[in-house]
Image (cartoon, rainbow, N blue to C red; front, side, top):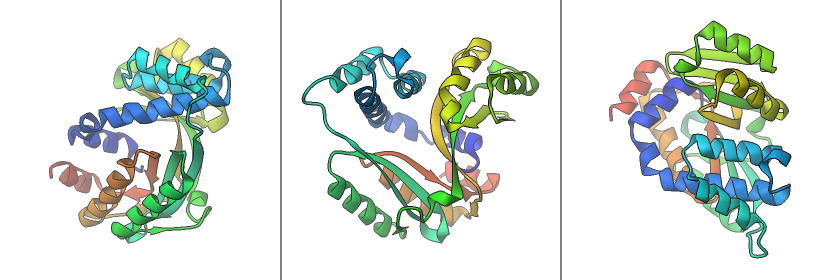
Length: 249
């Protein structure tokens, strides 16, 4: 989402992360299972699995949960998940990307379409929204990792494209296919990141006021509550005062 660092901080203060921790663990475990099934079950030989495990660890997923997810991928009864992306608009014309993993395409499509409609949005065709986003690798570090210049230099040496520093920490961006290599190089200089994953970054943003933000977030939260949905990305942009007002509700 636009306003990444401040928004992440506000989400944390609203307590939604704690309330949804078990659901988050489930989604991360699903990504690990799919990554392991598609390639080698050894993270060192499977870049996608390595990133999935790294992100799970950064979110404090227990080691036994990670190990079970990898083991599950090798079983004959493992679900055959299909990766699907849905695109549409929330109220106010805010673009929305929904990434899902499902063993029943019809069920997921029906649920996602219904959720958009129920919350004043519209589900579009493939390509109707994604052209407004860039696929990037994103690596997050806390403020303690170093000052802006130190982290920027480390990012450049590691092959990253950009580094954004705020009071909440450092956001390092790279070409999506370089994420594994860049994150590994950064670990050698800055230690473990707080998050390492592929994201969609909006090329342009859609401004919202408090009422608009409330409508968008009702849709986002409803989509995220769906077990088939892995990630939801929007292109809304809200002033700090609006974000703070929303956090105070």
